[in-house]
Amino acid sequence: QVQLVESGGGLVQPGESLRLSCAASGSMFSISIMGWYRQAPGKQRELVAEITSSASTNYADSVKGRFTISRDNMKNTVYLQMNSLKPEDTAVYYCNRAYYRGSTRFNYWGQGTQVTVSS
Image (cartoon, rainbow, N blue to C red):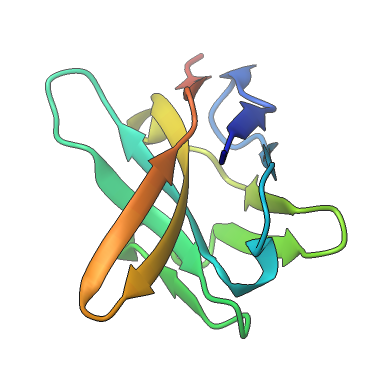
């Protein structure tokens, strides 16, 4: 059974940094696509960043140059380093683990961690 446990959220001021971590249980972590999504109040969940098994990355335009996603396959953990945080980054951040079977994508989600950016 796959479990994802996020940590590292909190309240910070604009311009500060946070690092989110997501520890995954279950097998085949190294071949999974790992990602971070976020959902702000009244908005749809959106992709923030994603990293493939070969360490290729993809970022939302709004976070490019400020956020960095990385993974440690030995620790079954994915990270999101968030720098120069803005109030619009405020949201619940969710860890995602995914794999494809043919063209069908299967997703697993963490419980979410709150990130609040406010002065």
